[in-house]
Length: 280
Picture 1: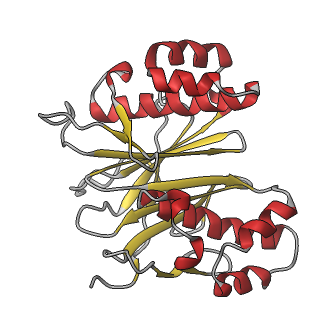
Picture 2: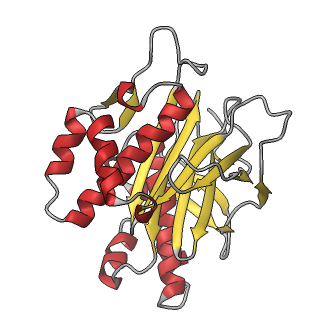
């Protein structure tokens, strides 16, 4: 695994002095869950809307990706919330962002707010979970067609376009484009806006090899300061995480690999320092 900001703290439990629960991140390849098992779990766990969505896919590979991703969501949320997978009520905003419906007396495992965000691409699902805050995640695989990346590049600010074009054509330039894209997606999803937020209204300054050096938020971002993490959890798979920077933000996250029923210790990774405009 390659972290492209900051360094991993290694596998094992979070520091004992931690008072804010860490961000949880799950990376699950499709083949971590055999199709027959995914089908059985989905039949028992997913709600009516999720079943209707799964049935609309034309290609089996897309349907399988959906079932793995959404059983992952329910399993990981059940572990965090202390509820059975089928008891979780997931509702959606007017823009389609899913949320876990709060309970009147809080969650069995503490707290009354548990936010999550899901991304899937190239045979991988990435799920982020956080307490007391909002989170956005995105995952992309290198290997997209050049034409698609050229189109993506036109959505960025002029400064970002120049930076991306400064790399030699090929994998180096593709990597720069997808680094920007995953960060922009993660930020927009954390805001609950998705592609409703034009990507040329905010910008990132990135180090050539690793790390977010600066962030210019859009005019409507009242907070202004965020923590952004870039990851390459497996070769040629890029991921980004965005969380607001305030007293509710843990200084690290735990990265889990596979479907949430193995007992392997997660990788503990420090979150970078906040970047962006200071609060108004």
